[in-house]
Length: 268
Image 1 (tube, rainbow, N blue to C red):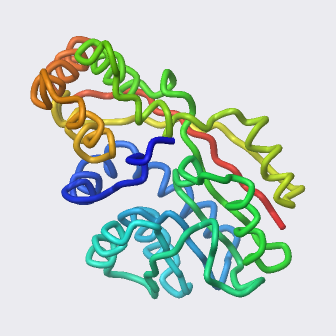
Image 2: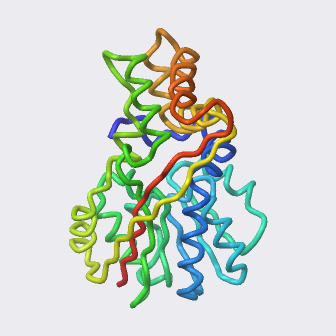
């Protein structure tokens, strides 16, 4: 993982929440809220909460439940706190690998598309297990490979044409870099989880235009920092090339493409 892969800073949180969240994250947030509601937990910990899309979905579905929402990035937590309006949510900056909570503090731990960023997956899973009560549930999701996520795959190829000597590969390397289900299961088992279910879940990604989708991916994630660091031919040339490739594949107006993730349920 590159040092910039976890830097959701500057304008990234706002663009991420405004464009990326409705385009690819919202369907999976609704899925986590639905699954969590069926478990009827009383106290929930969310790690890697980002700008709070799952937090809001869970708070809306379960307003009576206490939620502690954490993220390593203070700018994301600050943005999420401002967006939250319903439910009882405590916001804290915290590292998922060193959770500042006592053993057996929560009925459920949730994490939407954050495990891919853990530098030590087993340690992160072990911390989730430690703070779970007996028979508690760890519920999280990860993206499938980038080729199974159409917008991201097309943009990756377009950026490689713009920067052939040093393609920016953030999206392939990290968000879509942890999709081997055997590895995920093995690392959860090593962390102490024995009851593990992994399910693929397809959804549809929608954007008002190809340019909007490109802006979401390339300005609402650390891909932005990689593109800026490449220099010539520059950010605008990269965005224009990627938008052209998306429009050629999906059309000039509103566009749709497949997204795929895995939903993992691990019980203590």
